[in-house]
Image (cartoon, rainbow over all chains, first blue to last red):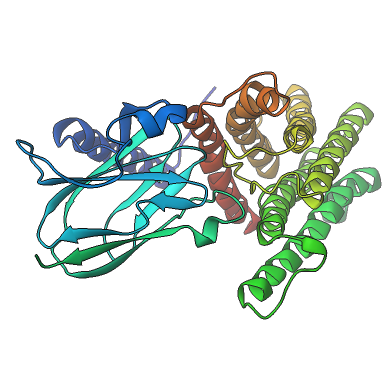
Length: 161
Length: 240
């Protein structure tokens, strides 16, 4: 069969394939060279034993030593609340946020920051950040989790100490 | 070959099959639009739904009928008519397959709708496992997908028949595009069909205890993304 492709079609196809290659390369470099990963990346937990598994047996802020970050902030989500329901963080602290869920999928979005994670049962989500602005930051569930979804909130207070 | 006036005509029986799909699609549009309006009224705080109907219940109605029912019924009806017009009237066998697909999809839609109305399926149209809906909700949506495959076989059969009759010639553009769209749809729906058949249905029937959420989400969005893209393609060739 004589396959005739119009010049414009050829240009269009080359452009499409090139775009695809560029974007896939960007993702590849970001993941394998820069080491970027999603907040939930291969760290797992038994969702039925969250309350007895460290560090989720003690939700809240904890000072840590010998790590790249100064504090660990542990959150446990369940329908329709976060534990802790409110927490204070010192200004300028480098904090690793660790969160998981005991039941269904929940969201963990801190309004006014770039913290936005999905919490899936069986998986641990992590995000390291520095709180360099004082004030109250609202934590919202932004993944539908049932009848009380829109009431599910918590609060991070960044204070000078 | 055909004169212009003959070309524009679509066989009455094929037109009826296409219109049946459009009726369901536009009823879905009306219901879904109404649900959207009710959501706004509820969120305004000045209005309460009667009979204990929940906000997320009508949100589920909104998503299922607009996201799944309207789009699927509309595009299949459109493709059947487009193929009938550009590649010639469907055979009786093809038309029967079309009606079979239509009724399977409609039965599935009704099953899912009843479960949503009974508040047994307020899980939104993207499922949000491990929130659990009634098994009939999952089964109903499976029937919508399976019916769309049966319907899609009409497009594939009509294309194959045209190819056989016209060796070496390029196929009519609208028929070819309908075929490609149908194939994209079949490839995309493998994802949602797998998560429903192998994970959600057995789990909602109590046959297995848990669902791996990461796998079910991955399979669902394997379907979700191309399904949106396919929606965009429809817009492009509607412009034709």
